[in-house]
Length: 120
Image (tube, rainbow, N blue to C red; front, side, top):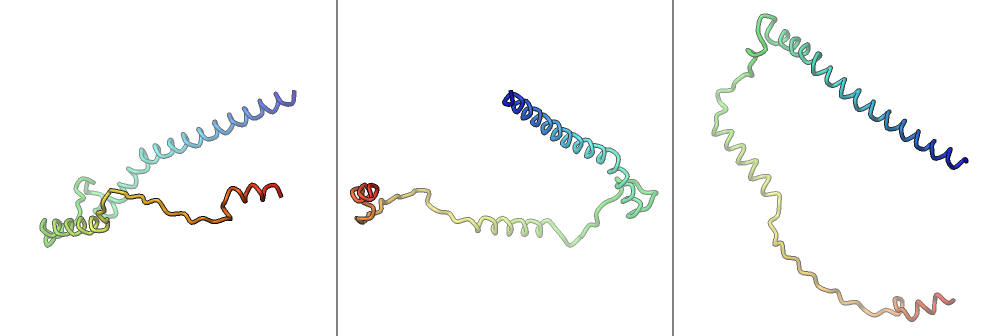
């Protein structure tokens, strides 16, 4: 009878772990949903007040533009990054050649002597 008791005890522990894990995951998802639903608009409104004042809309906020940064500069930077990332990898031949190593005879690895040692 103790065996049946231990079996049900293990099953109930598994259910407790299952319910605890699921409740942690779903409560975390619920908190993230509430954060993105309610806290993000408040944070964006505070950001808008700090940067532009209360009379401006969030859509009117734009990043500062640098007139000296042209498309040619962006292309040169991206080409340099591409060349740098591709130069890190070696281009090797994909053919593998496996040569069998020549084994030297040793009496220590001989089957005859290992059988003799096992009888001692």
